[in-house]
Amino acid sequence: MILDYIPIFLVLIFSAIIGGAIVFSSKLFGPYSPNKIKQLSYESGKDPVGTTHERISVKYYLVAMLFIIFDIEVIYVYPWAVQFKTLFGEHGLFAFIPMLIFLIVLELGFLYIFVKGGLKWD
Amino acid sequence: MPFSNQEYLHLLPFIIIGVGIVFSVVIELITKKSREILPWFSILLFFSTALYSIYTIHNKYILFNGMIQVGGKAAIFNFIFNFAALLITMSSIGYLKKYGSNFGEYYILIQSAVLGMMVMAGSKDILMIFLGLELMSICFYVLAGLNRKKHSANEASLKYFLLGAFATGFVVYGIALIYGVTATTKIDILIQNFSAQSSNIIFVTGLILFIIGFSFKIAAFPFHMWVPDVYQGSATTVTGIMSTAGKAAAFSVLIITLTAVYTVNSPNIFSPYFAAIATLSMLFGSIVALTQDNLKRMLAYSSISHAGYMAIGLTASNSYSISGIIFYLAAYTFMNIGAFSIISIIEGENDSRTNIQNITGLNASKPMLAAFMSLFMFALAGIPPLAGFFGKYYVFIGAIKSGFTWLAIIGVFSSVISVYFYLRVVVFMYFKNPTEDINTDTSTFSYSAVIISGAMVLLLGLMPDLLLNLILSVVNW
Image (cartoon, rainbow over all chains, first blue to last red):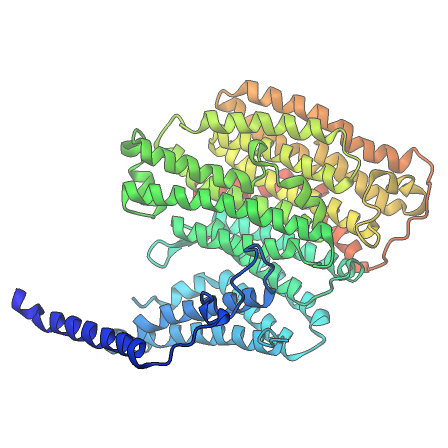
């Protein structure tokens, strides 16, 4: 029913009011002393002026790659964890052991990265 | 859904290699001596898997809800992959020290690549093919650039990665279209519906994209551009396994997908495509190889032309020509690995001494190496009592039985051209005076790899029935 959605609309309205009030009041009451650095557009702490074809350290690439590994781990483990009770009821230990093997192999890979110094920044 | 213990037992070859990889990683983690232990551990793994596969060849099962099959053709392919990896591991032990990248990871990557190939050869589902393909390819990309301080290796790795990823893109797009039309990825169901779907333009486009992707991997002519640079730039032992087991894995996929199509739907609608790439690859590979002075580059072009000979078998795609391809792949594996092992023995530091001039007068200093090199060259050229001859013979017989006599004639013509550049190596070794000292490394394991390959080339040449009857008995599984 359309009436069921009224709380959601209320949340939307209240969040818009509160968010707007915070932004507006900080503009209204806060000190305002602009300088050149403050006015630069935000670019993750890097200087946003200059060529975009900059060489980026390969370390970022490594971190991104390792992140993907653990991201995929979460993709597998999360639905399994949500459904675990039903799975365990139906299949018993079969619901548990394959995931255990998967996690052991994955953590072995993590250990490998750690021991080989893949997580050292310098 | 739980699977029975029996299913895990039938999956034993995969489990041996898979558990072996995990153990290898642990060995690499806990000890600095891993590079001395891992080659032997790998040899043990490959040997037991090869032996077990050939021993259980008649135990044919489809496992895990029709995802993977064991026994039959898959077992023969597993034998080829593992035997190739075994020989390559043997010749790597001495070579890697000289090449300057004696890492334990090398052996782990070879094991993973072999696991990927086994998954490819045994798959009954297109997604399993993709999984195996990725596992194999990613390991090969890394192996090609094994020595990261060498420009040639970096170039080889990057080129292989970019073009390989492009080819994989073709495969995935093809799979997506096939799935979009048929709503299944199971190969058996696809084959049952093949006649009904074969007039559907989207389905046929998907299949063609799929086949084009694998034409890259077998290094056939219009998709061959990565082959010479990658084969020349990578470490010689890596080239050895890439050109043999990697090619065999790609062919195994084409065989399991296309021959089943042929059995329910004659005539084979892909014959014109394969006839075209076979003709072009044979002639292009043979003619361009005539002018190559670098041995690895020469063998790369010869690899293109051998892909052409094997594609003749796919054109005909009757049970004779398919057995011919599998026999050819086994023979090609042994002769090519033998040749690459000898190059890896002769090769000096920094990719030096891989030119044909560097083996001038090899007979004077190393008569045994020269004899084996000429054996492999004769076999690759297809001189009768050796393995290469029977590979070509069975493929051509299959082609003639299906009425592709003109293709067999082009094949013979191309073999005649190729005799020139194979025998040129022999002429340089025997009929010219040495211009420089050839100091080879004295690792006995490299020599034993050469000797085993030579013995297999002779065995398959003198008693081809041994393997061919085995292949014919399982070719329809």
